[in-house]
Length: 315
Image 1: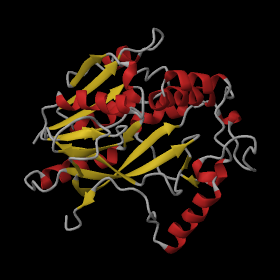
Image 2: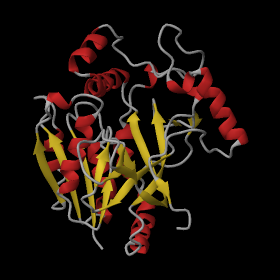
Image 3: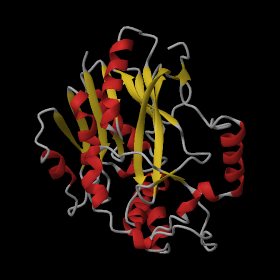
Image 4: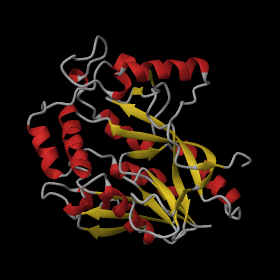
């Protein structure tokens, strides 16, 4: 059995993505790791940082991001597919540049891949998610933050990155990642492991830069630049006491990054949200009510959340 890791990135170091930690977190169980590295700004050192890992398993594909695909996140899916198509494994382990796996899960993941290798009805593996917010001690349990996602898929040409690269689908024919007709959800089995998502843990000024970059891929560059020219310099995470407190351990590969955190004084740990900005998803009244119902009356399961997978419950 062979496992290929794969990902994509552009301006990762400049935008404070833990891309190096992400790669290192699953390298021990991967036979190779393929990453599509988009040509970034002159002051970005992402490619150099990945090369500095000096691991023969890592294969870099240099790409150019075409601005015509900067809409609805299409570029993210296209870049994901570029890396996927260069993989040689039986199973393909996808991590985005802000996702990290705790070392305690690696034996569990590897064993699960071995168990299901010959079960051809299983097209992917479903992971739990922990979404950190603001710092490394708070995470989301609110309605609307996806609790599960596919992160391991079989190496089949019919499987492509879907929509803005959050997930994957089976395509009978392929016209693009936003295609609906001729596609279906993947049949997946659960793996008893979790993805730690650090995409919303950054110094507030870099978080605002990341939002600008991300929204340019969904809105188009011109609209995003116009919006952020009028936006505050710093991202407002809001009161952190509205989130869950993390009492576990972080992956070892994150230790140095966590030690280097220096923006505690710019965070709000209690009080009311700033009334002069749009409320975050978890601050909205409707989501707060739904979250209470889910955690107190529905066993923690989200209500009405889109699930882009077909779960095989007998596995």
